[in-house]
Amino acid sequence: MQICRDLLTMSKGNMTIDDYLQRAKQYADGLAAFGQPMAESDIQQVILNVLDTSYNAIFTSLTTTLTDMPMEDFQAHLLAFESRIKSQNLVDQVTPLANIATKSSQGQGCGNSLNRGRNSNNRGRGRSNPRSGPRLHTGPCQICGRKNHTAGSC
Image (cartoon, rainbow, N blue to C red; front, side, top):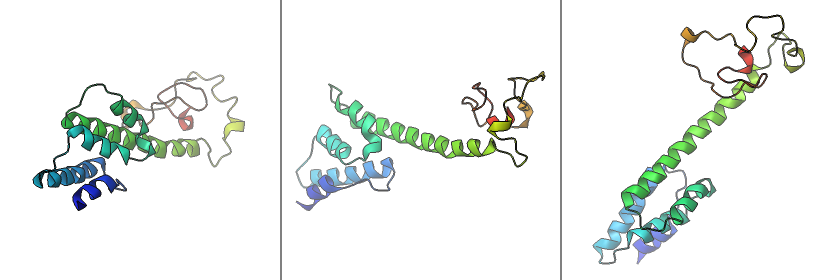
C-alpha cells in the first residue's frame, strides 16, 4: 500500500517536529481507515528511525524505555527536545558576538587586558548597570571566568 510506504520512507527534512509528527499521524490515520492500523509503538519507531543525528540523545532515551509510552507523552518529549535544540542554537549564534566584543578599535584586545582591573575598586564586578535592561549573557567571562558579564564589560 502506498500510504504504508509513504510512512516508512518519510523524512523530517526542514519541517518542525510538530509538522513532522502531524504528517506521520496523517499516514497512520490513513492506514487505520483502510483497516491496517499500526500500533503506537510501531509508529513511534518509524518516527524515530528517520530523525537526523541531532536527535540521537532523545532517540536513545525513548528507545530504552521499558514500557510503552502513550503517543501524547512521546510527542511531548520530542517537542521539548526540539525546543532545547533551538535554544542551544540561539546561544551558539550569540556566543561569537561575545568573542567579537572582546576586541575594541582602541587596541584593548587580549594582549592589553592583562593589567585591566588592577588598582581599581571594580575588579571582578564588571561595569554593567542593572537598570540598563536584561542581561543577555550569564555564562563565564572569557577574561576573568566569573559569571553574569561579558569580556567587553570586564
